[in-house]
Image (cartoon, rainbow, N blue to C red; front, top):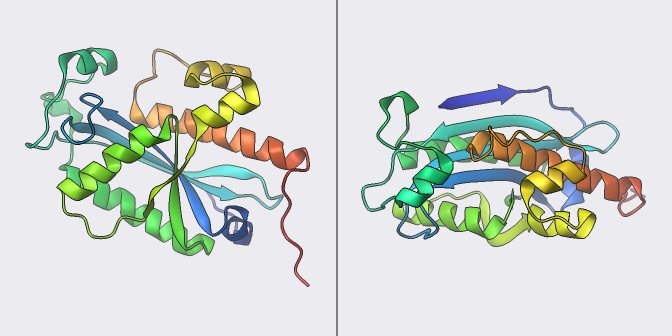
Length: 219
């Protein structure tokens, strides 16, 4: 699975550079062969780029996703594969080597960081330290020198949704936010990343609309 979806990005992207202290939020979702980032395989990864529209509202800009070949140093738990429905040996997956998949995603992230005037990317994910742990482990394992993400800071939509809606499960948080969620499509990195992106945008934009944040005035 290789999918890249492009949308028009507003020329006025300067808001983003100040909104998150110079960080560009990038939504990530991974599907894996277990819970152990150091030993279980990375099997799918998706990234959703965000930007701001002319009114300062956070919106989805671009999505990229890849199936990933299990790294030979990693393993898959059968229970994890049954949960996700992934068959790592299926040739129809058209999977990339771990290093190549991350290289393509990181290239896009770095371009977006530069275009938005930010200085670094920060990961947004649901139960974010899980996804961040797998990305960091894959970076180290594949000897990738330029990781655009902050090594430990992240935005966790499970926490944000718990605050905003009293829900920490992605499907239930989306339901509370009136975001459509199809359980049959869940546990796909691309689908979950898009739902997470919509949830993050909804919470951030609602906070702004309630007066919680406004673009700093320029003297």
